[in-house]
Image (cartoon, rainbow, N blue to C red; front, side, top):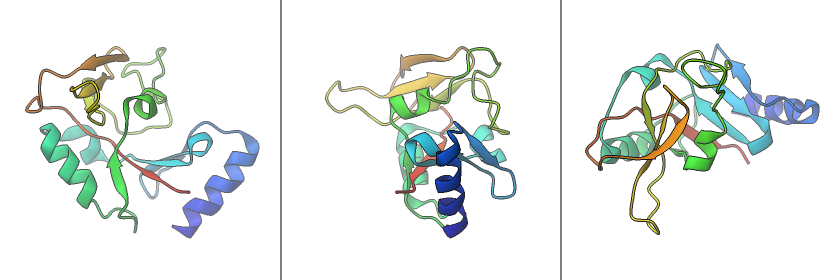
Length: 139
């Protein structure tokens, strides 16, 4: 964890958008003080919204336990419309298709980001099967 914080601090000084750490299978986003899960299972497994929430909440990965589902604005920052799937090239493990975002209780719906086209959408319901990319705050 200390390594990630030091790397994040150093990279933030140089203005890097995304920094992949292929040994730890994460991507750092210094401008947002976030670390993103980037392992093969995060691009392969699909689950309901409830399962995705439980998965991120109980995830113990790279010595960190404060993982969560990202909100739509955070996940949307990963979009690169010039690629397919439409995600930053910093990510080694991504599939096209839907990824869960945090439920917006004010709007009464669950959002998804579709990395096959980079679009924000409302899900078809809590039982729709999508992937999840867990995120954690570093500061």
